[in-house]
Length: 93
Length: 139
Image 1 (cartoon, rainbow over the protein chains, first blue to last red):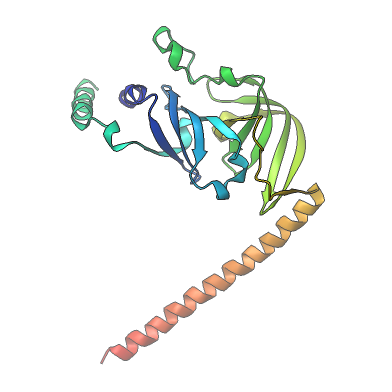
Image 2: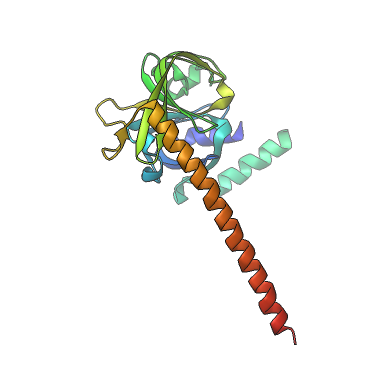
C-alpha cells in the first residue's frame, strides 16, 4: 500500500514510465491503483521513431505488471517522508 | 484495476473511460491490436470488437482483420487511446497487402539470421585475435 499511497501523491506530475519491453513513455500521471496500474495523459514516447504505432496515442493505461521503472522529477521525492513511511510499514507488517 | 472506492472517485484507473473507443493494445509478444473496447475486468482482460493486428516491418505496415477478440489481461502491456485528429502512423509509412508484408518479414528474418551469424563470427574472431596478442605479450 505504501507505493500506492506514494503514487497517489504524485498524481498530476510529469513522469516517465519505462516498460519491460523497453518502451519509455513520458506523460502526466493521471491515476494509479492498488496493482500500480498507471494511467498517463498527454503522453509522448521517448524514442518515437522506434515506435511509430504510438504516434497518435495521447492517453494510455499501463498494466502495473509490465512496468520496469517510473522515473520521477528530482523534486518529486521527499526522501525523509518516504523513509518514515517505510519504517512504519516495516514495523506494522 | 479497482472499482472506484468513495475516496478514489476522481482517481480511478478503470478502463471504463475507454469503453466504446478505438484503442491500440500492445501485447507482451510485441503484437499491436487495434479495436473498439467493449468489455474489461479487474485483470485487464478485454473484449475488442472489429479487432485488427497492425504488422509493421520497417516502413511498411498491414492491418490484418481479426474480428471479435477476447484478450487475457496477463498479455496486455499497454492500452492506448487513439487521438482521432492525429495520423495513426508517420506519413512515410506505406500500407501493403498481407501477402507482401509476410514476404518482407520472411526476407528480414532470413537477413536477420545471417546478420546474427556474421556478428557472432566477428566476435569470435576478435576473441581469438585477442588471445594471440596476449600470448605475444606474455614474455
